[in-house]
Amino acid sequence: MSLGVSAIGQGLLYGLLGVGLFLTFRILDFPDMTVEGTFPFGAAVAVAAITHGVHPVVATLLAMLAGMLAGLTTGLLSTKGHIPVLLAGILVMTGLFSINLRVMGRANLSLLNQRNLFDNPFLKSLPVYADSVVVGAVVCTVVVALLIAFLNTQLGQGFIAAGDNPTMARSLGINPAHQQVLGLTIGNGLIGLSGGLIAQNNGYADVNMGIGVIVIGLAAIIIGEVVFGQLSLSQRLVATVLGSVLYRFVLLIVLKLGFAPDDLKVISAVVLAVAIAVPQVESRLRIRRVLRNGVTNNG
Amino acid sequence: MAEAQLQLQHVQVNVAVGEAVRPLLNDISLAVAPGDFVTVLGNNGAGKSTLFNAITGDKPLAGGTVTLAGTDISRLSPEKRARLIARVFQDPKMGTAPRMSVAENLALATRRGARLTLAPRNLRGQLAAFKRLAAETGNGLDAALDKPTEQLSGGQRQALSLLMATMRRPELLLLDEHTAALDPHTSAAIMALTSQIVAREHLTCLMITHQLEDALKYGNRLIVLDAGRIVADYDQAAKAKLTQADLLQYFG
Image (cartoon, rainbow over all chains, first blue to last red):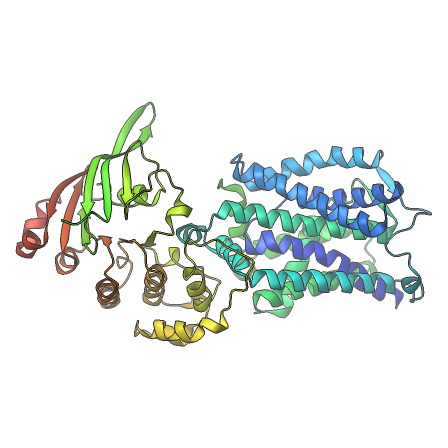
């Protein structure tokens, strides 16, 4: 029972990662590798800030700002430096590894005996693990509602159009490069936020916690699409959050089947690889096209 | 003659071929009067599409100026020029956002060249107007306002592209073989719609075509490009006397 509650809580907190990745992977149509550096960056910034006495709420917002900065860097490298966005993301991700070590001063920083976002009387009064469900649900609701509102503004529509058809966007006076920077900044902001929240929930930040998070985010998006089918764009954001929760349950089941936690990454990778390689699945998921967009130059 | 709506002066566009530089457009000068509908003919590689790209800013000029409605636009980015210039592409996929609905595409086009703000897009408030507009096409577009454009037929997409290009009146409309990818019947329908909109809105328009019949039937002026130069220029009176046989001398 408590394992299930924990899975929901973790799923919601990781859901922000899925939603952040959705902006680049699904709307702008390219894979953003920055994510692997942004997620631990958010975690490192939040935990380091808290250990320096910063209020947990402020520390969480700093994690988001840190993520935005990382996304902005990838965006500028890609659009101003004309580096293919896949490579730009890898460069930023690699650089962030050193930066994360600097931020934390070591490879692993614990929040033991430090106040964090989950230490308040109300959350403490809840059953075990329910605190992460409440925090995750509140943050996901706010973020998804804001994103849906944004996507329905004139700017949001221009953002979608730039991802959908850059040639057409340009002919309507929308600069796709600006939209790409915008998407990377917002997306990575959410991923930094997700990292900051996960770190506080786990009680530590680790420099290696970013390895494979892009697969977690993609799994959330793809499970959301496979399970919920044809949806409007706004509904797909919600589906991604739910997909992230379902992914946690998939992991639980895999563990119950007797696989070791160490095997989870290879299992996730194989499942995702099959989804991309099998043509019937692929044609529905449009993954190949997204990968192609990632290695061509633009901006 | 009134002041030209579109004026190209000594426009030069080059392409680097290894060490050498080859001209794609070679010293092109052209003045188009307001309301003129000019058909543009030429072999593949004659520079027709480059001419359009030079006007829209997608290809940088190596020399010369482009003036539109009295403003020198030679130094403006393509995004800035979009406020003044609308374009319909040959490939029906190029002109619309495939995963966005017809209504969403139209709503974007109402703001062509305008600054994107955080104001609500107000789709619902414009639906009635969009429905009326889409009904003009006579191909069922008005019943598909909620559909993603990737589900439309090629003819419907080109009709939509045409509406999007003209609903916010452009100073210049560029049609880049916009019926070439359609079957003859649909092509004729789109050409009729084009002609109707251009006449009603008194648009200044350049149309690239490979259909000699269309080139003769539509427009009040005809130019022929070859190897980056304008090699023939027929005004309304001269164009009226032209035959397909006359034009064939420029091809082959």
